Image (cartoon, rainbow, N blue to C red; front, side, top):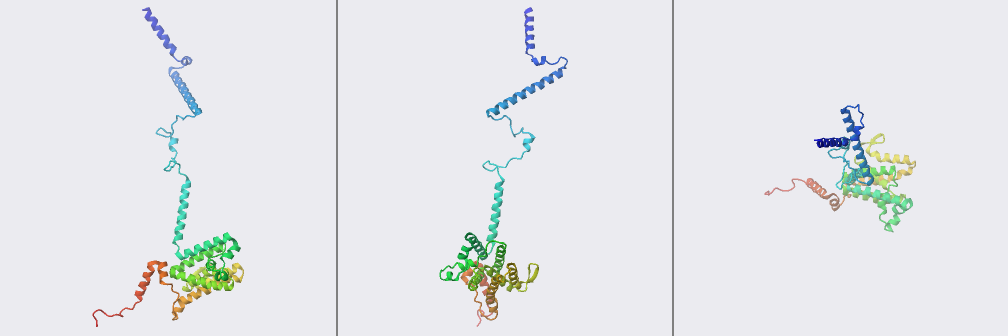
Length: 341
């Protein structure tokens, strides 16, 4: 019996010794619930300190952090972030791709508008841009020597490009250059739409030939402005009494070429600025007279493009139109009925 009591006393002593020494250091006057709360707080503080020590050691060694970002247990802050847009290769999609797409769309729209211009007017405007670029690269002196109209070098040197470059050179880029290019596009498109591509080509060839002779006689190295004035003159004579807006005035259409000539003279402060417009009005009137006035007086309209040129430039629709016009002009009732004597 004594041995059993001694064993029990030893067991009780061992259990008391296993109790945390921190519990013995608690104030004696504290309640049991307060002692339990203090013990739990201290234990959680020790665990957090141990966790931070482990993370610091991992960071120093270069290891990965044990914290999980995102996932199902992510915090509200992590879930509130917008996911980054990625491409098929896994790389982040940058704004440069969107800007590049916008640039491509703008270029495609410009090309679409350029292709929508009537063919002969588009070729003429392209030549104007190319000749202007060559003039900028060569300078004034070299461009005058290479692009200007020179009848001696044209005839004897066979430099046959000079009449065409003289008809396409509008000078260096400026506000006047932009206005002239716009007039060329506007009046050229109107003529080509009204007369057809083949007839418009014939008109331009006549203007270049006539103005080459007149410009060589008057010493004009370039006559692109004269070609524009001739286009405007032919259009204005087709609708002479139509009212158009010029600056702040409303004038008849036939006076518009003279108004443009007057404005150029006032801007230049020299009466010599009227010479290209005078040559253009004269050249345009030669075409208009032989195309519209002379046939009405009983003459023959010889300013007609050949049929192969019409078929080549305007396609089958023009050929069908010519056939339909010929059928409409045929007199009815001239033949005999079948079975009649």
